[in-house]
Image (cartoon, rainbow, N blue to C red; front, side, top):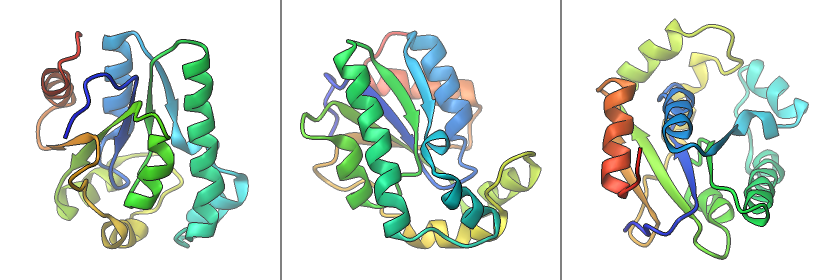
Length: 172
C-alpha cells in the first residue's frame, strides 16, 4: 500500500543497507530536509551499540519518539523531510508513522552477505558488523496496511533512488 500524499519518507532497513546514501540522494533530488536517526540517539544508546550490545525496546522508545517529534516540527513548518531509521519492527514504524499517515516507509532490502560486506567496508560508524544478525532477527518486513515500498539494494544508489521516485510518483 502506498499513500502518495505522504509528506515524509523514512528510509529503513538493517545497518549497512545504504540508508544514509539513499536518503542523501533522495533529499537532494526532492529538495527536502534530511535527518539521520542516529543524531536522535542518546549517548547511552551509542555507547551500548559501540560495545556490541543490541538495544532493547526500552532503549528505542524515546529515540523513536524524538524522531517523530522532529517530523512533527517539519509538519508545523510546512516542510517535507527524508529521515533514515532502521525501523525494524512494526511497533517502531507505528510510532514513526504518526496519527496522520504522513510517512511513507522505503525499506532497503538485501542479503545478509551483501550487507555484511558493505558494513565491513565502511569507516567511522559505531555499529559493528557483529550486531547485524540481531538486526535481521528483529526485522519485521513491511506488512499489509503499512504505507511503504520495499526495494532490492543490489543496484547503484542512483538506480535505487530512481526506482523510489518512480514507484512513489515523486518528481526528481
